[in-house]
Image: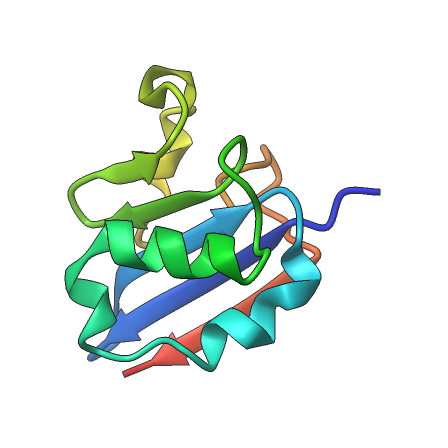
Length: 108
């Protein structure tokens, strides 16, 4: 059973990062508790942290920022909705419906 997860980080009401996975979503709080303003400077560091805490794996873990998506796979395979829905905090771009089994919003 897929356990998708979405962590959205906002600053002053604007989305600054999304951490998106299709597996390991039940580990969402372990990742959320480790998010600090300092780590947000590096999508690679966030990806590494989430991966180490089993929030997804290299085949389905994506870290999106305002300008790009960090994914160990082929970025051209990511649907355009990763970009077009970025500003929607609760929208999970992994699915057409935007739904996620696990969701956490972190306001910094």
